[in-house]
Image (cartoon, rainbow, N blue to C red):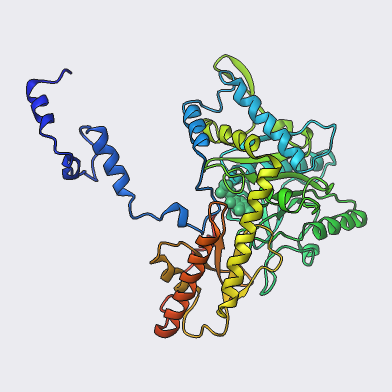
Length: 462
Ligand SMILES: *Cc1c(COP(=O)(O)O)cnc(C)c1O
């Protein structure tokens, strides 16, 4: 409708502050619209008190992008990734990156790699788990054996998505408990949990609690010996949500990937150390045939016959395009330099905190840039939760949590050092943490560990 003379007159009276005089009805869907400036001001101000993403060091997810990456995201914002028929070049770009990741993770030459971009590692983990469930069931059915009781083996340090996967897809969880001083899956208790119904063992590269890797080689060798003894061959899936974009660059000679024959699938989060803003994961299979053809749907979509093998359907293309930009822009060399400075910053921060006399390191075998600490005897009247609360006054978000069973008596403070942080920032953070400890030592702390609800841990999510 055209503006009336009155409307125009009203607009002239706008002071620039009018949007601050709008009250939103929280119960009813907005009846009328408002100016773009007002809507923008309201949306942004609504979130003012949220954490500053740059200071949110409880998360692994990327909070920095170069201007060119942001341009690319904007350029691809209106493309629906799943519409392969209309955007076949996006699909080709994704396939290209799967090949590159297969190479980065030392997949065998001369095979057809297979994999897909996902919304994050969660979707990627579920696809990996499903492939192993299908392969196990197919093999069991062929041998005329019972297929009703699949199980999956992981450590107690597993990220919550795997518990979700096992519950949603009816797989018995066989979770090897942790213990004080050992927070990763090793071969030690495998004989109690692995059997003919084990669809796979999931080992982590760069776990969320301490940044360590499970003992991937030892687990692999144990499974070899188990096969020799029993004839049962159990594959491995590596949850490389974080480690998938760190190990190849910092520890190229370390065998955590497809160089180990039992490793058949690997997931990684493009939006963690892949350096893409939120919304991207990857799952890559050692070769095409591991992703059971049963799981691929050929859909007649907008006039084309296209394979889809993701759990999710429509999604944005921007993160995929940004990942392609980063792989080209950085290459192995660039990622290596970035991961190196990030790791050095983590080591510097860790050393400063240990030197303060308040903390003990939890993760001597850490691989990704995570600082995981517990308070030592010097901290008599406060705990890790107090420290986390106190530094929050300065804007820092650090995770404090109790470890999963059977190490619940251990409390931890975890700091994810991401590539956007520099040495000066590390020193500011170290000073803030030490000052918080000194304050708490004088005044005492009051925090108690949050109560956990059932099996849903309060532990680090991402
Ligand atoms: C973050 C993470 C996940 C979940 O990945 P999203 O990318 O957040 O979906 C799974 N496993 C591990 C080890 C993780 O660090």
